[in-house]
Amino acid sequence: MPQRANQTVLDVVTWIQRHAEPALAYRFACRVGVCGSCAMTVNGRPRWTCRTHVSRVARERRLRIEPLRNLPRLKDLAVDMTPFFEKWQRAQGRFTPTRTRAEPMAAVRPDSAPRRAADAGIECINCGVCHAACDVVGWDPDYLGPAALNRAWTLVNDVRDGDRHGVLKAASAGGGCHSCHTHGSCVEHCPVGINPTAGIAGLKRQSLLDLVGGGLP
Amino acid sequence: MTPVWLFLAQRLTALILAPLVIAHLAMILIVADGGLTAAEILARTRGSVGWGLFYGTFVLAAAIHGPIGLRNVIQEHTPWRGRSLDAAMLLLGGLLATLGGRAVVAVVGEP
Amino acid sequence: MIRPARNHPGFWAFVAHRVSGVALVLFLPLHFLALGLALESDAALEGFLAATEHPAFVIGEWGLVTFLTIHLAAGTRVMLLELLPWRDTRKGLIAFGAVLAVAVGAVFLVRAG
Image 1 (cartoon, chains in turn cyan, green, brown):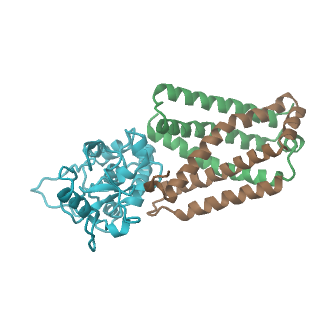
Image 2: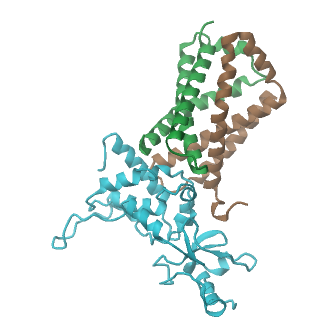
Image 3: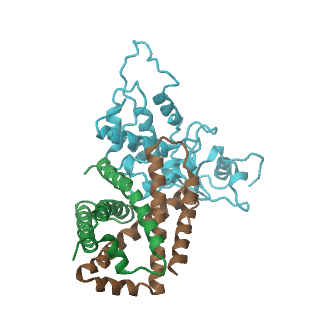
């Protein structure tokens, strides 16, 4: 296939589908690192293929492209993301509103400690790279995984959320934050530079405070 | 036991064990000089309340810490989980506490 | 073959932590039984300790001392990462723990050997 300057792994997959294997199944949408749908395993590592230059990852001009690990394969390079999103729900990774749209917006100080903690994890694009990189997800099918727990941590720190205690409980149940062993594979691979391990550690601390009665601030 | 209680027990015992392990290692390195003898050990420990407390705490913390850790390992690397695993780990904790307690009595108690 | 996604210091620290932990918990009952020999008589413990002068025993003890140091260092790092609100993975602590374990093992071998 033709080599081009700034060619991405996604460009390669697209070229193969258009010119060599029309039945090849893979998933992408935005091509610019926003939508989080094009993650695959490239030379053994989970990556967002649209923002991964071939020149940076090809070893001796060879690329091995596989579907994401830790999720059921649908066809070729496309995996079923259902278990991934089900775990977001199990971790209560959804906002519980306390105001209606008729009320004024809540004023949240951007420099307050909880807001800064939430901001550190809020840019997740749900690409599933951390989920595929995590060893504990592979070993324990119940484990919620770094993405869902990172989301839970942002909500626990969102003072506008109406059920932060419920989120903390969901994230501390079986298969929750205490199953994390701090390998840091999610931190190594997150394409947008989030540190889910730090968020999960925050959940662990918060769950202990909850146990001794301190609860949420 | 919910995960958070097991987590708390594991980290609390770890916090207790850490300084004890440092002292234990320091002692091993100090007395390792040319091999150790029972007379040396027993002269230090026999009838000592301090060493009795030191090793008693050490044994109890390890008897809690070890089985919780091993339970995680077994759950993650084998299909064994559930009540039978929990029971086996409780048994292991009991075994460690009993054998360890016996060892403390052996080296601290007066014959 | 190590999976490329796993090949980073945090994963190796975990492997060392886990292997040393399993080894130590399996060794503990034997350690306690050996010390329990003092219940029989001082001479029984003395006889056992004399047998441990054998090089095979010294190598085994060296392994245990090294494992204990590894488990201490790796566990301390995990607790520092979990209990303090740090944002990075403190890989320096992994290197420190590895050096410490090798050093403690070496001192043990020099003194016992």
